[in-house]
Image 1 (cartoon, rainbow, N blue to C red):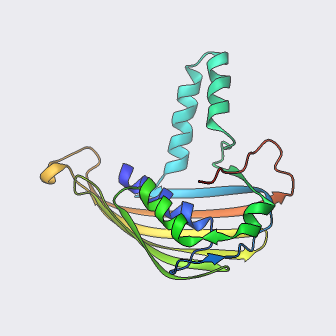
Image 2: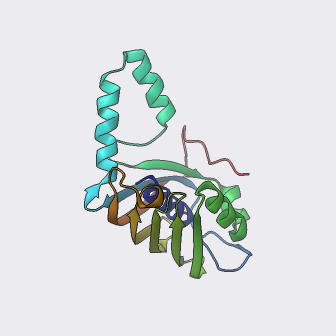
Length: 201
């Protein structure tokens, strides 16, 4: 299922910016400041975020108080409910988005995945994603990103794929899968507080 998670991460990452099918810089119509994203990812009906949260809780319960504090700091600003806080700076808004750079970075971070931008503007985007894993695993999905207004954006995608071993050999969790992901991001305020903006480059 790692390929599925990579594919979902790839397209969700692209959803946080405004895309276009041509190499150009386009404006961001989003308010700078602190944003909070909540997402629900289902794979064959199983809530991935909830399963990961329960796994983290079991792991944290085995740690000492000092280890637990260190782990919480390393995990950053995610909440138990699956929310993630991000900081969008005025400079990032003013700079806009170089879509070719974003697309290249995302594909490099998820090897074997390719994106086809169907349509896009500063108000949203539609796209398709296709991933082929090194052992024959495959995934095909489509998604849509919508800027509701300057303080809210939404993202939804759906995809289907198959998990196989080398040369079709059986592996754990092999078989067909159906995956969906919905993300909603809302502006929380102009002050990012302790949340650092994402580093570029």
